[in-house]
Length: 402
Image (cartoon, one colour):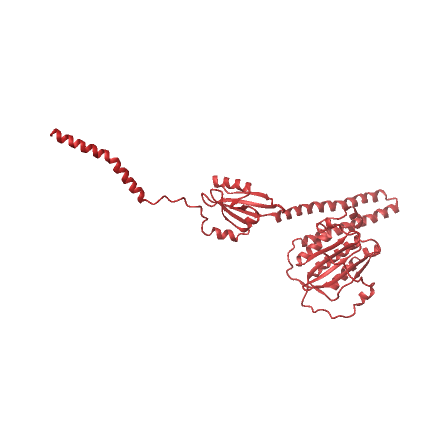
């Protein structure tokens, strides 16, 4: 080959090899400009149907994504304060969510949620993975169940304590009677005290049985017509011996012929307990007034006494089982601390309520409100029955409960 020609070819080859990287760069640029920009990672999306299910659940529900953002939450979750500004605001739940996201294992825990200005809420939380990025948190409010369990435990403890007192007294008195067998007067004295303790024990057992029947607070299945006059008269007669012993006059003052809707035996039990309570805490020679008043939809049965009264701070607790305003007096009054609790349960089972007005040193007024039996026409005005005319003139008015 001619040396000149070979030189030209080598020159052309060098130019080509030098231009090749430039051509490759331009081709790469054109290819990149022709492509679509890379898409951002898709946000975590709650699977179809899950949001609908969460909204109909009674328990609080929320879904947390991989960045610990709450992407779905039900209304109860907000009301409990679990979610705020799109974030899970409970540290214990947040730590549980992190563990579930790490290993996928379902976990549950009991928590006490404290809210400003409100009582703590006890919840059972269950945490499970919905996907590799989403975690589901379900919380069930167990506050009422815990309170019921606490009341049940307290009830058992109180029953044991209350039963122990009269049983122990009977045991000691029986030993005293045996040791005083040669002393007739001592035997009679101890026997009288034994009888008193036996009556107290019988009353306590009976009220425990009655309370156990009512503690469900379930509505009556077949309510019947309850004649208020008959119920009140039975309650007064039942407590006549105790009233006579203290010289207390029990008067029925109110509209006659009224009818309530409910269970006659339960209503009679509640009114009898109110009358017994009024007699027990009234001074000798005082007066207890039982009145009846018809409202638009309700019938009010009110028992008013002139007793020791109840401090305002105690009014919210007097319906608790075994609670006594003055524990030092319960031995002398023979009270069990269950009477007002029974009244409250009777009111609840009848769809009514019990209200109280009281002032220390002036007396108390308890009102049992029951649904009115509307099938019975209102009684025509007329003279009161003979029983009413036999009692002293009624008081002009009865203290209204607040």
